[in-house]
Image (cartoon, rainbow, N blue to C red; front, top):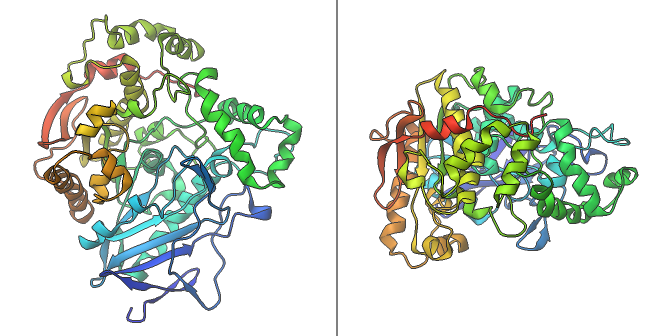
Length: 501
């Protein structure tokens, strides 16, 4: 590897040495999903002639980012960072989040320098987001040649490419951990369920995933119909999807984001659908043994819902009328009394996990419905097949989190995982805190992730998950492992299903 030219199954790629690490950035792993390949699943890149200059990150997928349109259709690339020395090194593959709507691997937060310093090969990749990646048009007239799950196909192809090629970059294909947060965490759970991802990794870390963000072809139409309204289209206009600049479609996507909760309270934004790539819903597939033998860390943040529940344009129900409608639409009227009793301030509230009592009941409802409850279900499902399952919860409320009301919100653990004190989000999240607070949570969380990636064991003081009453790693000012009893929580939610038919 002296000249940093590596032979892969898509051709030779030229790497670079930067700041004590080796990098190959922006390697195309798939044919560009443009022109006739728009709304088609990804296929392996044909072998390139000459040597590809892997000097810079590739294009982000098309999306809104901080109010600005960014990205390009030609975005399917993979990035590899590794230490200067070593061979057969452990590998960590990061899948970015963003609700399947935003995100890109070149985000400064997701660059893996800290993992490389710890002797790990860090890999990230782009997948298509929002309309081009996760909108399912396949049931509409005129869209018969569209594929479903284009973004999911990107992820599966990327993982297969990484597994097949990582040894050429000094990584161990038999020691691959995949990880992600939010939709990335959900994607990790999805990969545990997808048959075509099987064998591409041995370990997984799912941070704040949404395992139930999964549609059928029919339920997906609920959001697609909103998209049509936002575009001021009828079904007859869908042919324009293959003709127009796809950045124009973001107008319809913004309308979906604004209106989906008011049409169908509790429904997720467009994500994967059940088809041949994901024939069984993830939690059910894992219950059936789809991820047998995969070691798993899975967890959530204490106040996930503060990122999503708002007085207007809310991401999840923000009043009891919406929750009641959510139950009625899904035939779950029988559970409403238990939900009110558990979450309403006047309810008996038998939740024995005291730290989760109090605060806005709708924030608690969203946290449990989208994140905490399904994460526990995933852990319970995987525990049937392997002892090596661990659960955590991020509970650090910084001064900024307290003052803004965000508390220990969604994504607030990312600065600690990636050791990014100078990222704008990190500066916001840790504003006013002494440096030792940030360094402490980095030591605890990043340290546990590194240990798990390298050894398969995150921490000798972090006991395995055992069930609804179980040891849980609490990341806080004083990190510790505690027994949390979530049996009442799980009893309230049971196995009620939402928007699955």
